[in-house]
Length: 212
Image 1 (cartoon, one colour):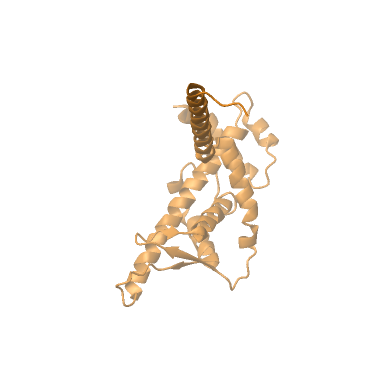
Image 2 (cartoon, helix red, strand yellow):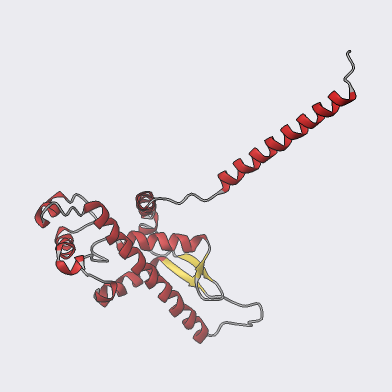
């Protein structure tokens, strides 16, 4: 076997070391790229939400005696996987025209009875588990009610945000300024959207007030 001269051995060792460093750097870069979050487009996000609405069918058809327990944290905000289920369920609910009509221009203008009905539906499917500090001996009825009211506020904010997202999605996919109101209404083929509500919304989109 031929001997390698000391100088050649140093060069070979250096080349191997450099190659290993380059390979390690590439592997680290690849790993970082794989772990980097991917920002979805509005279309893909809505598609994801629509798929989530389909998966929520099991919650809608859940046994009337069963409720999903949602834990509250120290700020009385829902947490955990169950809170995600709750949020997705709310998203599926506000897309139903009989629960959250889209012909209201703003959430604050929507009749309170719609909001109350939706809250009652949430309470029929979910129960909120009060936060209990380790130092607390017991949770009084007053504290439990305070936590429930905070959770209710969170639910209503969630409803409002998802309802606005739904309307924005409809505008981005169904509104065509080159067509008349009636033409856009006639083209509507979504069973989750009532045509009379959609017409009111489209008329607003076409108005001068909406263009300001």
